[in-house]
Image: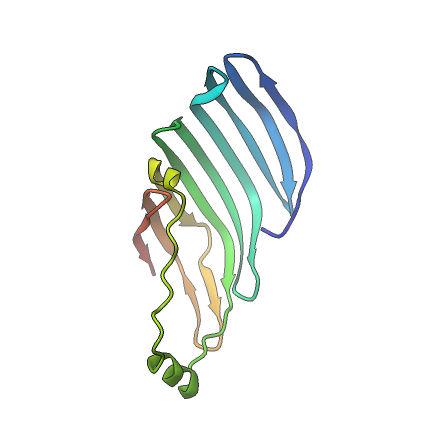
Length: 173
């Protein structure tokens, strides 16, 4: 997200027993986000928590690749040892426009390369303790408009697993 948060407001109430986030809102581009929730404290350290993030009309821009607008209702709840992010992300509109390089020279260079392919570095270990149960839907089909295709895709998928090793299930037609 390249857009800065603007018009941030709300209350954070801190007591010896808890941190309470009360209607923290912000503008992000043309969209709005709201964060609420509570974290119980044990000896001043967060123990149990329940955080809710609602986002409406939030723009997502991956330069030279993708533009979309999202709505979401997500909850992150649990303890520091085991938690889960649940909810729904609704793609309001989107366009994937990155061109695909199909030149014979670049394909030949990739197949004759003697170096090992890059492997994604593992994330921090704490991500193994965050389960995922997120449904991704769409209001309108996502447009694919590049040098290879001009079509629409309607995803209906779920994101499961952990934040360390997420997996996708579902379909896009």
